[in-house]
Image (cartoon, rainbow, N blue to C red):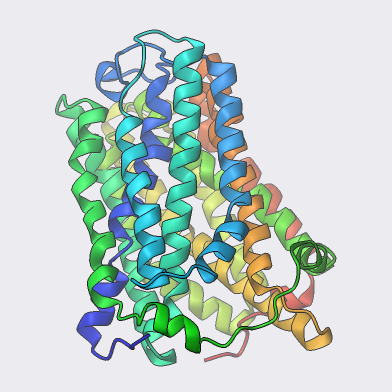
Length: 437
């Protein structure tokens, strides 16, 4: 594969995932919630599809959990498929197209209920579409990420990764700041979702920038001996430091995903303008990550991770007091809480790349095994399961029982539990990044 040689092309390539990431955010944070009216107070007719329940709550909650687990489990076989794909058009571009098309189709179909009532037909329909969406989305993105080390050198990867991080902030900001603006203008969430659909065309950027030699390239590729699936899985699951990290990550991610998937319901019940609040959450993230990186270099990942967990818990706990603040002070108070949260939220994503990479590297130094991809796959499974529990069982239960006003307090409780668990992480994890420039 030919390398990207100019900064302009590398930056453009780093923007490729912006649109499809935006679709994933809208599905998880808005469309899944829009199938049930519980938890919404203001503009219910616009936040929901038809201003009524369209799925059976208990079954739907379980299907969300199953879909998230499938999303985590599917990473490894899809990675194997991508790495072993032969195509005269180039395996990376072919795999992106194979994933991108059903992602778009399932996204559009998710906006169409089969019946106007909460029946089993609708529930199963949306559950199957959710699984198809997550599977095809995962195929698209793991193929895209697999090209990072192929399209540029180690210096270019830094620029490429930084560009991707900025795009992550952009789509988070668009999702949580701009979507509520359209809904409050009286545009139904289904039409808002369609407004962002053209952004997915950014995923076609690799079609023009990737220069693969197709089948000829496959003939010259050195074939490496790969461990069997069961050996890789056993290799990873016997890494005790890594398992302790996964347990901590699982608890933290329940809190984080509960915030991301239920924040629109929370602000609806609290009577707060979500646009200003979420802009305050995400706009400062590039600067707050710089502070986080300084803490990592000086004290190591352990101290930095505890710092962001504590800050996030404080911000969420304070936000839980919104129902007791006078209306005139409510918005400034919520913005202050969001600014506190911003010092942590961006760092939660970066840490998930550092730990599995370090654990896999250290394991290779002491054994003959190699299972780097399995470390990420197993972590994806834990993240998928925790996200399913958060956006499925917990959020649906809060919506059905009127417990949405307590959402941020529950988020803070999970993050504080992870904060306590982080003190038991081994030194090989807590020392990551210390003294590195």
